[in-house]
Image (cartoon, rainbow, N blue to C red):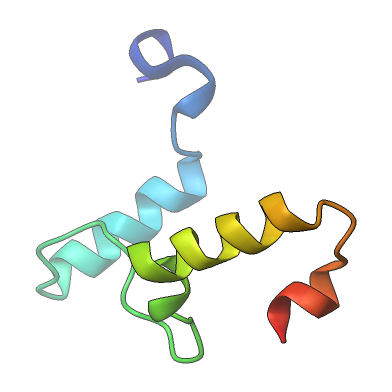
Length: 67
């Protein structure tokens, strides 16, 4: 696997974990959704709003942008 995938090859431990999960009936290697992640933070309208705010005042801090 490492000759094909190089640095992005999953580690031996991760492969064993996936093997166990598949044996238990899992059918995907994608992560399950996690609580607390802000899905709407990447909405196109939010990105456009932030871009406009940043272009108006480049010196804003992260806290100010979050508000």
